[in-house]
Image 1 (cartoon, rainbow, N blue to C red):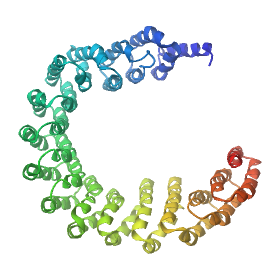
Image 2 (image 1 turned 90 degrees about the horizontal axis):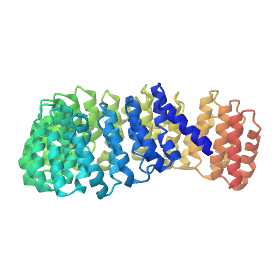
Image 3 (image 1 turned 120 degrees about the vertical axis):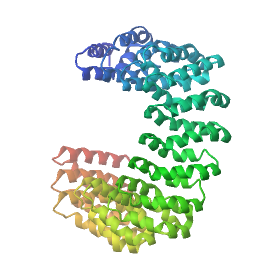
Image 4 (image 1 turned 90 degrees about the vertical axis):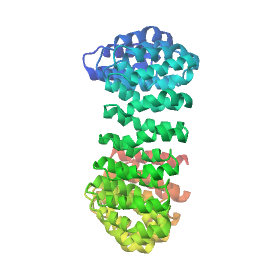
Length: 582
């Protein structure tokens, strides 16, 4: 691009930023780093940044893009030493009434602060944070909460004290959304403050968020619990964190209980075994039995991670009765959450206890009417296979697989295809041939292309499990049949199957069986098949002798180069060039 072209493009972008149409301004703002590169560092600092500041009275979509772009401007302004020129723009963006603009601004600021030295943080960002947190309007306060934990470790002890006072003020702000932001980022601040100061000054702030009248504030307190458990001695945690955990786990707002359930494994890991046994297991049971399905789902998804922290006897006597009830929960999402996690209990309990206490549960989930429950169990069979072997589930497993394989939703069929090689390896060739082989072949005929493509990959993996001899006797005859099918989709499936099989069968099979099929399909009446053949020949050439590559493959590609279809010509030329360069 010439200087004149560059200048013209810059002017076009600048003009577009003044356009009445919002999408046009958004598009132009996305190119603002190009303008900065064209202008150079000095002009960007002296001209472009002031111009952009004048553009800050704009629509949310435009400002959101600008907030992201400014995060990438450090190089364009000449390095982090000139970061002060960006701060006026960020100060306005962080005060925006639009939450997305503030969020993107904070993200950009956080990435910039990581680049700054301690001196630059003290000189530029500490005063900036003080202005945000003490501004008259509440929106800057919201933005400021996310920046404290980055700036705090880099300033003097006196300045740290000022920041703690400022944080206490936003924790007590009269605006709920400010308190919510302060509560959300309190855990990050706790992680960078000395333990002694945490006990003296931040625990009172933590307790204030836990009893806030707004459930959105209390919701965020759960992560502060986790942060404190990592920071404080066990005795202090017992006195100050445990009572809050109890309150949050039984909170009147289901969202707060949900958050407690979702983080309960992290909470349990922060306490001693005696506190877990005496205090926390009963809380966890209450979450598993909660009246809200979202809470039960979150608790059910943590069964294995929590059971890793408690003795077998407690798992069997206390947790399993509740888990068994959840397997019959009225809500299908709860059952799916349980099915996605509970298989992990088998390695914890061992073979005998799994057979005694878990097998019936697994079988029940495999027969669930909701496909996601059955799919979750099948996708995690490896855990139980390692403990007791999958044979014990085979009678229930097969009906579940067949039902999933015939689901109307193609994404479900796609998901089950991905598990077939694992099942085949675990169940063995006899079971597979008797029960699952027909399914795999049916998938090659599926009406959805993604299923047919996945089915060919599935065949490749099965060959890797069962060997080339099995492929010759069971798979290749089917591929041969597809090559002459009147339906062109099946003939394309033949090409895809050859691509998948060539790397895993012997060269003799490629040369005597797979390659002749491609040569045959090279004269197919459908152009789409012919250009797929050209692409396939490029793949197959890697698995045949050089003589065959130079004769059969080159000859076929030279014929395709003369094809009447431009796409066929293009891919044939590409394949031939690749072949000649080898």
